[in-house]
Image 1 (cartoon, one colour):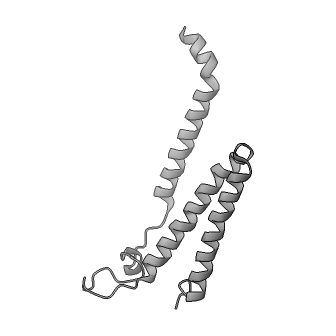
Image 2 (cartoon, rainbow, N blue to C red):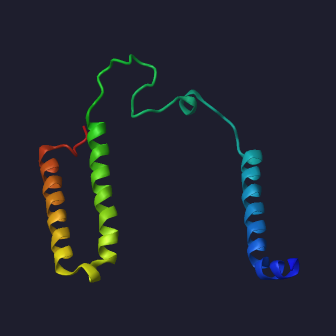
Image 3 (cartoon, rainbow, N blue to C red):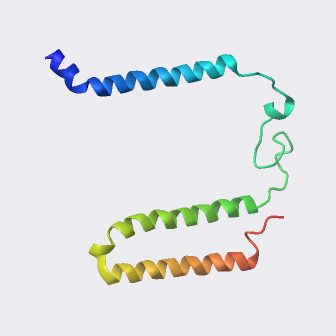
Length: 122
């Protein structure tokens, strides 16, 4: 019984052993052979372009939030396009037209943001 199991899954077990040994070997080689020259710039925390240990009541630019929200909106647009494209043959013209309306509204919003200068970084 064990021989049948090993016979059926030998290639998978061999692949796992080789991949794990290569991964561990590369990590160890990197740890042993890499140079360790830390400087203050490398060790400093980076957070949104501001120094991390300033006054907590400092003014924070709202453009960081705006760019993040725009990224989420357009990322969700792409997430809706994939299942729509797969099921387009089943949903027909109504599904196509509703997605075109959705894309039109998002395009109008994108053009509005562009014209208002929300995407310009100074």
